Length: 390
Image (cartoon, rainbow, N blue to C red; front, top):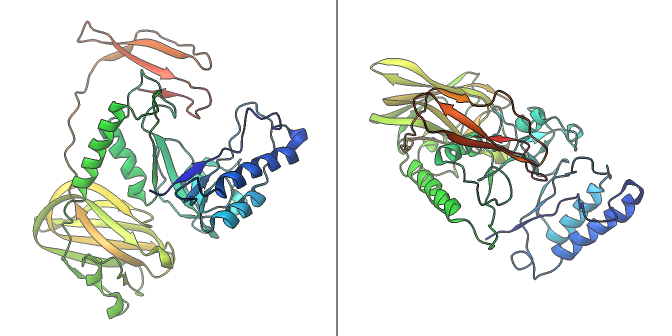
């Protein structure tokens, strides 16, 4: 298993962390990096796949200036092509929220001069269509309300995890799902059960590619970039076209099939290019809208209505250069358990006052029942989660 390390630039316990001792603190942090990254006993036999440094500062903390460039040089010197997550122009960037949701459009490139600890959250979430460096937006979220273990908390529901998945991986970016150990240093049984459910859902989703082997018609750059490469199951081969936009590709599945997800993939070795597309399906002889999207990137999952159709059209309407796709797939999402929708809810209290760091309990009453429901909003110090409401 590849390993990464999180070493926060903000060490709240160090007496060196002060604006008057910036040089000493930066040297102290650099020494920690060297100690960890140069020791073959750490990582996976001395190898780290990623160093995560979020540029964090707690509320009211000294605004110590970090010597990122020197730190980055040390990481590459000791760990070669190790990925770096930071607030600067590195190979991985924060997606701009802790919900695990990426933006649409989502460009995996940015302009370094728009990054830093004061970067606009919207910029981080969407990237930059005219960006000058490649930087992957990583979507991070915890399986629980906060980043640390609290016995009274429950993991997110399967439905919530599925939504997060389609809004992160489904928009072409990695999902970092935090699983926090309990006081015994183990994963909680509830979290493990939810992870197995989540894995089962994903396995079922990808179990059958309903477009595999489908006939594809449309313009192609050459035989080396022919349309059939999109559904032959070999992602080492690509389709491309140099005709004017919009470009239409039509899939014939051979017979009607039921699906509600289409997957598109670009060849990122040639850069991220597609900026907008739409999908149509033929139902009872009539073409109707299935869905629209913006960027594609490594992997794009577009959900639409559950339809039964034999023919599908993919229309590329905007692209920065010749569009290049490695794959078009169709899937049917697994069914999720239907949760009961409770009507007639009302807060028992008209207003609430929450002290910082305090967990507040309040009552919600439902009109059709004499039983009360309990919910909570927790504001946890040091977690980056400023309010989580259920």
